[in-house]
Structure formats: C-alpha cells, structure tokens
Length: 318
Ligand code: MN
Ligand code: MN
Image (tube, rainbow, N blue to C red; front, side, top):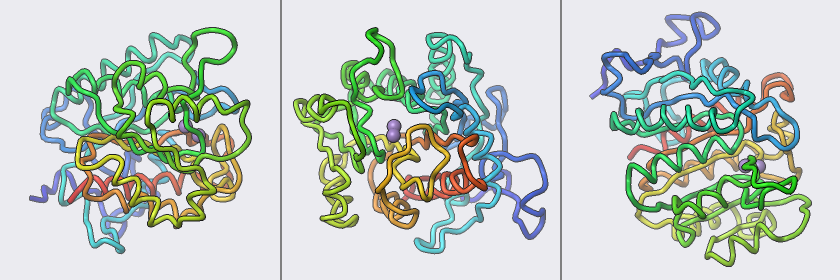
C-alpha cells in the first residue's frame, strides 16, 4: 500500500527545519502533475481573509501551517495510525485568490476544488478565514448532488445574518449560506463549542429553527467531551459528513493567533480528543481555518493547527 513517493522525508534523514516546506513534508503536486490523480486526500491552501470581520491575517495561515507541519512525524502514538502510509496524501498547492475581489476569489477557489473533486481526491482545505469553507461545501454539493452532514468545532456558529446592512458574505455566515444553498442537511449538522458575547441570539435561533444541534461550551464542560462527541456522532450518523475546525474553538491561551478569539474554551488536549473521536465517520472533506500568524505568539497557534491537521488526517482513515 505504502508508496515511497508519498512518504515525507524523516527528520532523522533531513532535519525538520531544512528543505522546502510543504504540508507535512508531503510531495507537492500542482494541478498538471502526472501523479496527482493517484492522491486519496489532497491538502491545499486558500490563503484568503477577505471575509474577516475583525482581526485579519488568516491569509498567511497556509504558509505558517506548512512551516509548522514540518515538525509532524509519521506515526500517531495514541491511535497507532500512520496516515501517510495508509493513504496517498499530498500538498496540492495554494489557490491564487484575489485579496480585493470576493467573487473572483471564491470563484477561483471553487474552480480549483472542482478539479480536485474531479480527480477523485478527498479535499482537505487549509484556510484562510471561515468563508473559504463555503467554496468546498458548494463544490461537494455540486459533485454529490445532495446535501450532507457537518461537524463544526468553533467558538461561533457562523450562522449569523449578513453584517453592515448588505448581503455581503463574511466569515460569520458560511454555514447559514450553505444551508440556504442546500449544501448542508441541518438535521445532520452539529456545532460544538459556542461561547462568548453576542449581538443577539439570532444565529442560534436560525439553527434551532432548522434542526441544527448546537452544543454551547457550558454544555460541553457539563457533559464532558466524550459525551459531546457521542452526541455529535449520533447527529451525523453514518452518512457523508464534512468536518470543519476553526482554530478559535480552542481557548486563546493555546491559540491566540486567530481573528475572533473567545475565552473559556477547550485546551489543546481536549480539542485533539474531539478530532480523534470522529474516526470511523464517513468524512467526505475537512478543513482547518482561521489561523492568523500576525496575531500568533511564538508560533503556538500554527503548531496546534498543524497537530489538529494531523489528527484530522488520521480521523479520515479507518
Ligand atoms: Mn468560524
Ligand atoms: Mn470562530
């Protein structure tokens, strides 16, 4: 099964700080690469934060995560998995998204993702702000012809109405838009970790009215994370499911480098446990978004993000 071409160089052969950084030190396969069609799971960057409503900088996320992920080793000690051996995973590169034109940026991303899905590659998107997720959801919906489930780990629902009096999409409403467009099955959608202050309860109400299961942080800590993830698995069931991880799900003590931090969240260990609990679901795609390196401290957010990416790659495999 394991193909040497798809194995990252070991840190015992090439020091981890050396070489050209790709995600997890995996081979870089641009769209015209002859071996791209063999890829099972494709990591790609959407370096774009044009929908950020507060602190920007997530456009720099993919590069910081490539750098931090060179520290990732081959084996998951907790699960015994070796995800780069059990699947062909590669770095598919970044999409050239205009920093000044939202429609053009999202259009380019969708065209790229259409190509990825057309080659039978499971998409793993690295953001970028959370509106980037909408491009993946739209293309998965178009390719599959039906709505699918969602597990969202985030301190926000991202079900907010448009801001600033217009119709503008922001990183605060990708999932509202995805429900409106029929990408997500609200009855198979679970949102975990919501907290902090809010303008009103309109986002929660929007989700409740459509059958979304929202697990606010108070319920998470009251139930315990294992029970929360049991609920999550019950909500999405065995059907096709997308997993979206906003780094602001984790407490800002562990993940300060993000646009909209909210205190009182899970620690790194608890967050990684949530991802591990997803193993065995029918995960059709995943993402890690909202890492904003300009607000990071000592690279800890990027390092956590890279570690979450590794756990997601494991959770996407049997
Ligand atoms: Mn979010
Ligand atoms: Mn968030």
